[in-house]
Amino acid sequence: MENKTERFEKLLVKNGLKRTAPRLQVLEILSGRDSATSQPYLEQVMGKDADRVTLYRVLQAFEEKGIIHKVLDQQGTANYAICSDGCSAHDHHDEHVHFNCDNCHKIYCLDTVKIPALKVPAGFKVEHLNLIATGICASCSDKVN
Ligand SMILES: [Zn+2]
Ligand SMILES: [Zn+2]
Ligand SMILES: [Zn+2]
Image (cartoon, rainbow, N blue to C red; front, side, top):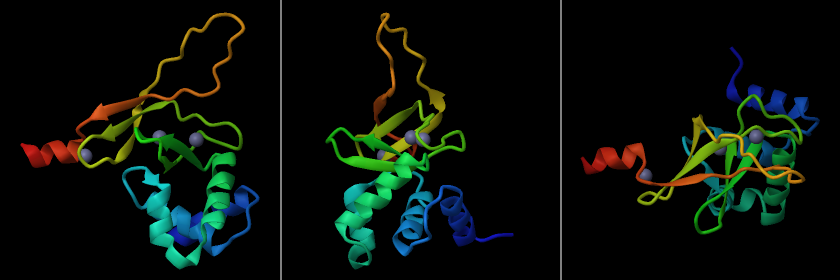
C-alpha cells in the first residue's frame, strides 16, 4: 500500500505541481484534521519552514487546482479544507454546508448536507454559494451532556 507522502506526491504531479516541501506539508496538515484549518494556524505550525508568501502561494495554487477550498469563518478569517474527489482545476463542487462551532470555533465541512441550487432571476449567474451554519458541534455537545 502506498503511504501518505506518495499519495500526496501523486496528487501534486497529477495537477502539474512540482513536489516541494511546503506543498507536501500543507497537504499533510490539512488532511490530518477533521475540520478546516485556518491560515494563521498553518502559519503557526509551519513556522520557519515556509514564510507567509510561500504559504499564500501554496494555498492559492491548491485552490486553483481544485485540491482545497476556502471557507471564511464568522470573523472573516480564511480556513482551508481538502476538496472531495469531484473537484478539479477551476471547477469546484463544494456546495456543502459549513458549520462554524460557537464553542471551539472549528469549521467543519458537512459534506452530506448539500446547499440546494438557487433559482435566481434571468441574467444572474451563481458561481459560488456559501452557507455557514453556526451552533455547537458534535464533539462540543458531547462534552456538555
Ligand atoms: Zn473544491
Ligand atoms: Zn465545537
Ligand atoms: Zn467544505
